[in-house]
Image 1 (spheres, rainbow, N blue to C red):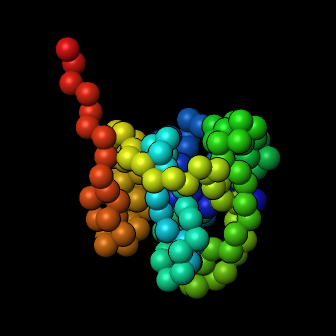
Image 2 (image 1 turned 45 degrees about the vertical axis):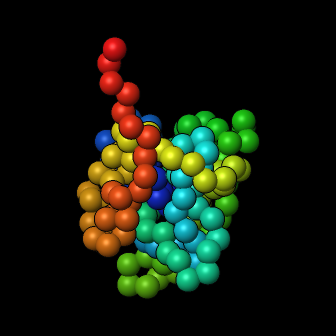
Length: 146
C-alpha cells in the first residue's frame, strides 16, 4: 500500500525505527490541501482549494500500517485514515493512505518536532519554497534547563 507522509514521518531515520523495512517510493503532492499544525502540536492536512502539500510516498506492508496506526493514535481517535489521490513524479495520480488529525484547530509545534519535518523535507528535496515555509512556521521555544 502507498502511504503519503507530510510530517515527521517523512524523515527516514524516524521511519526506519517506526517501520523497519519500509521503503520510500518517491515524492508526491496532495493537491487542494494545506499543511497545518493542530493545537496538540502535530501536523495534519486540511482541504484548501489551490493549496498543495508536498510529502513522501512509502511502500507500506500491513505490519507497517499497524505500526503507523498505533503511532498516529487511530484507535484513540487522534488521527483517522483516509485514502486520497496524490500526484507523484511524472504527474502520475495515485491513491495513498493519508493520516488526518481529528482535531484541525490551529496550534504551534515544538521546535524539535518541526526540525524533524524540515529534515525529512530536505532529505527528499521537496521544493525549496515549500521547505522554506516549513522552516518559518511558528513554533514553541525549546525550554531552557533550569
